[in-house]
Image (cartoon, rainbow, N blue to C red):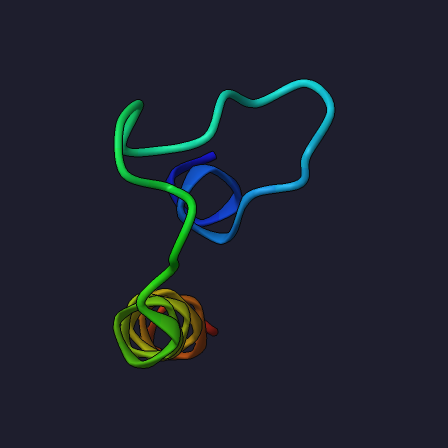
Length: 45
């Protein structure tokens, strides 16, 4: 949900942050996405 809120456009998740979403920080969004992917990969058995 965090990533969807940052990225925007999800119908069931509010944009995040609630203010200032007219211009998104694509680099920041990519960093969060990469972090989430790394967490998922590190939990593989």
